[in-house]
Amino acid sequence: MRRIRSERMANRTIRYGVSLRKLHAGVAAEKTARYMCDMCEKKAVKSVETSIWVCRHCRTIYAGGAYSFKTAAGTMASRILGQFKSG
Ligand SMILES: [Zn+2]
Image 1 (tube, rainbow, N blue to C red):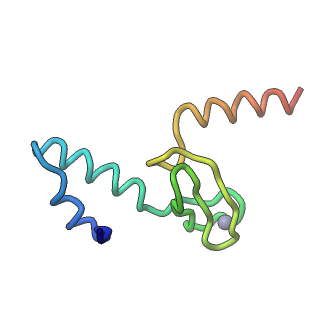
Image 2 (image 1 turned 180 degrees about the horizontal axis):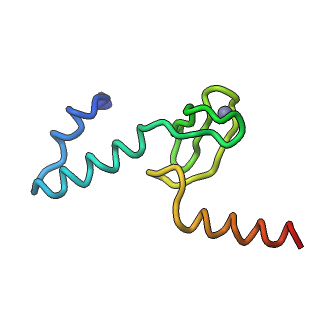
């Protein structure tokens, strides 16, 4: 089976309600967008696999959300880890 690549074609496969199509479009836009890298400060972080994000410029690998670069649970965990590191 051929994979559907473009977002426009992918939206055609979402059926049974305009609200579901709109929800899918928002999630797909969040997943395919580029994000700011913390190391080189360039807008080059892209999703390569489920919850794995890689900076195309400096090749730093981040663990993030499946559909978004940073999640609420992830920011909370990094804050707690920072408290442990500082003392
Ligand atoms: Zn980078």
